[in-house]
Length: 117
Image 1: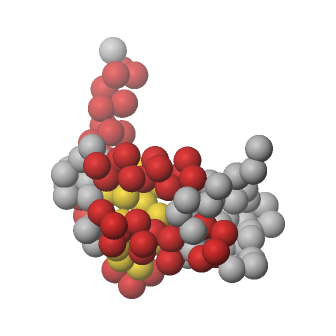
Image 2: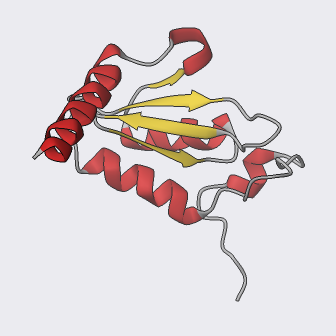
């Protein structure tokens, strides 16, 4: 069965693909969309491609909950963000939001308490 390129991943990516990583798929994009639709105040943060990893995007909700998925190129997540009317930022310019770090700390503390019981 031929893979459909619903989100323009192949078209917008260009010819390069990271060598050690798998390519972004429709399921990756759909996971970001589902996350954004099921939470309030979602913003996207684009992470650049590296030698080992394809371009990724982090979706961060109002409470700091987050998810990361491969997107293929910044243009793909830009299109998704426009379609959902959500902001998208370059993480190299803005950094990650403080609420994301606070959420991670809350999770670590919760896991620590559960391990002690």
